Image (cartoon, rainbow, N blue to C red; front, side):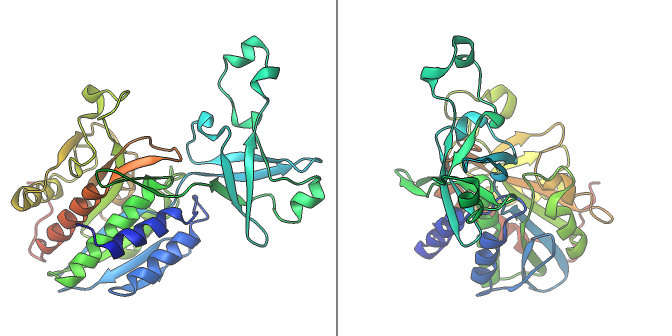
Length: 355
């Protein structure tokens, strides 16, 4: 079970705004907290590293991206209304009517997302989905000059919401995708540090994954760390609610344990290591079959340098890319324990070549 201290850190991490390219605040919190048990550092991309040397026989990288989706101010009109573009992949309907918190010139600036009222729409307009170009953020300014006194073009923002506790050890929050991954690799490293094995383990809160078609921070970090093995941690679609097709993505339940991905870029050796470790520890898990890429940091880590034996561990998540994503704390605990113990099973003699 996660300790009260770990849960408190998780909630602070989730509540700290940090969209892609603007991750410095949650990254700083992650490093400061990890410094209690690991050697920490950062790079120019925005990645944060925490290292436990262990026996230093072989290097393992644990990666969870710390950025979230958000918006960026693109223009301010004469009336002081702020227009925005997306950071990452948005369902624009989610933004309508939300409050936005920008990191402004001298501190946070809060506004509300506005659009044409339904009463004034023509019948055909009511049937159409809103585009982000139809929306603006009203920060209460009466003029362009008043708005620009507190906000600049290029300032980033997130939906203004906070983590809430729900029954059955569940929480809901924005930024779960994928601040949860950054938390799980942190928690796994903390547990590994308490009883280290033969491996040097480096946990990385990677940057820019949500905009990372170029590889984001994960590729840079893997090139720097030069691991033999890597485990990426992300969220995946929970299928225990209406909508998802189990025949397409598998069956993954909140509270059902971590999800292990098989196929695609995933090393069969590391997959087997995780599967066998889960079975040994009686940790429940489900399997996701990936015929192509995984759309996670794993896609880029496995190509670093001479190649890295990489696996993907995911946490089931409901309502992805919304202000109220939902996960089970029990799944986070199990994922961290699985990863920590898998790292202890690796030594310099481990052969990562699939034979």
